[in-house]
Image (cartoon, rainbow, N blue to C red; front, side):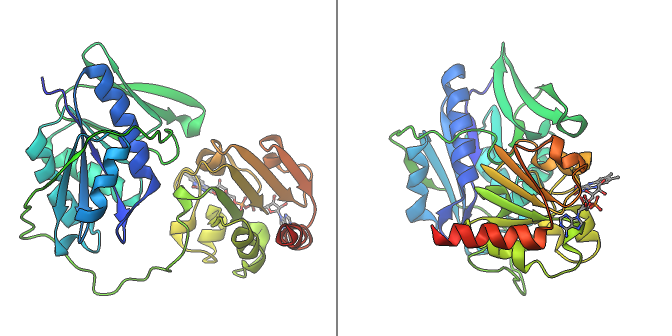
Length: 319
Ligand code: FAD
């Protein structure tokens, strides 16, 4: 049986996303318990110089697919590159972040390699000779252990579920020539706000719900900006067309686990809680003292969000 672990990293504009260090750290722990080695896959254009940083989190071998066709991070091309990097190191376990791109690559890789996949996991370990992943079920009310039979097992880890622990190794960087023929390579247009903190990576998330009453999220945006955080939205706010789907937090949206989650005008439906229940500190602002969110928060403020949120922002800006 192969013993190696491959951690598929993600980068943006030549910098690793934090999830990369988390999957590397999870991989290092498994590699140590299996007595195997940890490899990192780094994909993108002009990524050779930054790839070595993967060794700071335990990667002994760093496989780089450095191609212009990977510049836009499209899942078709990235899956092709990832499949070729998997073939280059024949791992027992492939770890990847359960981000938008990671989920896409994980599912495609699983189908292509006919390999078992556990999505959206919060832990992974070795039990006997089996890889076991832990994933929340029933909207986060329970945890299920999933045994993966077959090789390579693919496990997609939720952002911020596993701690990134620096563990320097003498990592060797190897560039692997990947063939991207036949894949979709380039975006015609890219609509990304530069400087925007990604929801799943953010340390602070300020979410607006139906209580916002319209598409003017200025008070929520101002608080998020004062805290260097990201803006989230409930599904109601998204369904109303006030925020993009990419901002949705919850069972059918993104799962976030920031240090601080501030819910503004959100009632606290179970499907919303499923996306933010792992946040370390939850603050709720709602004008209805009976709102269910108050039984799930650490600090609750009963009041009109249009009074409370600007007052908090003003105090933070004084610091
Ligand atoms: P509401 O429930 O309408 O609550 C609005 C709150 O704002 C109220 O508590 C009100 O008191 C408060 N409020 C109003 N005005 C103010 C004010 N001026 N100041 C302060 N407070 C104010 N929901 C998600 O969020 N994410 C999901 O991923 C998701 N997935 C779902 C999947 C399924 C299969 C289903 C069936 C539902 C899903 N939902 C999801 C929907 C979910 O059930 C709720 O309908 C939704 O979360 C409610 O959003 P809300 O809290 O913004 O709105």
